[in-house]
Image (cartoon, rainbow, N blue to C red; front, side, top):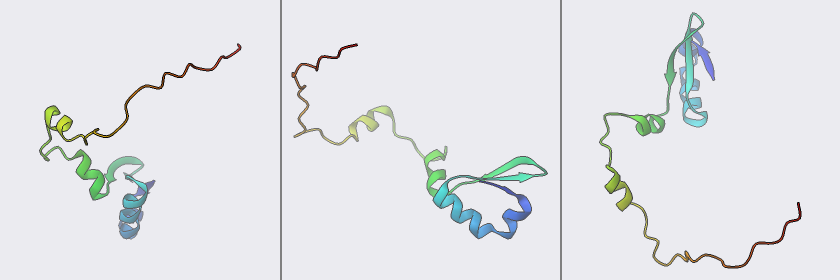
Length: 82
């Protein structure tokens, strides 16, 4: 949703609640997009100052597939008349 600066100031609690529930809220100044209000969780996902895992750590963090049946079904596909 887009808010003018004056409206965002008057209804700051609502702007923040909508950012948490609906996603980023844009604020305009004199008709030009000037700022975006994000929820803390959305900001945390894109925060460049947070240490990032490297690819190896990412792969090692994947849950184990032990016990998951990964065999392929050999049943032939059905006939389709085109």
